[in-house]
Amino acid sequence: MAVPSDWLATLANELALRIHPVDPLAPLGCHYTFHAGCWEITLFVSTTEVVGGECDGEAFASAFQFDLAGIEFLFERVTSLGWQPIDLGDGDDLGPHIAIEGVRDGHSVWVRVTACPPAGFQPGRDFNLLDSTITELW
Image 1: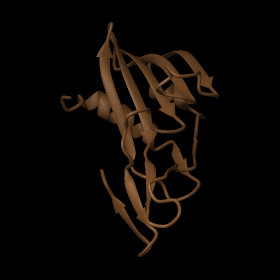
Image 2: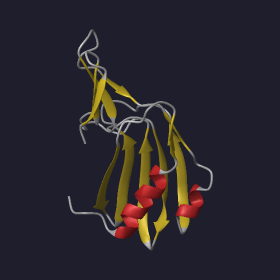
Image 3: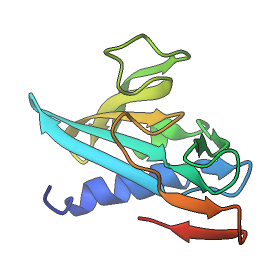
Image 4: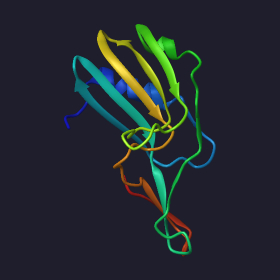
């Protein structure tokens, strides 16, 4: 995928600043695509995979809060703000998320901030139980 334009990178960074960790935060990820005249941007916190011990291979999500106050000031216009509190089944790759639709710098955008990484994304870090080290993977 190409390097994002400045306005898209700036928006993703402004949204990332609204993520407040409850415990040590795994790396943040951002996926974006342009589809049917709209930029779709998904922001997420990666998981941590345990290496060694009884939980070897299990991945855990980082706990965080997302600050919605003033979100409308990141956009020229917000046309929709929604919350999907639960996974909608097998075809739902995003799971629980906040969705914001609007216009930023003249571009139609649909932003999703997910509770967990979308399906298909590898863990962002490893936690080695044997030597208590954390390794950032991306």
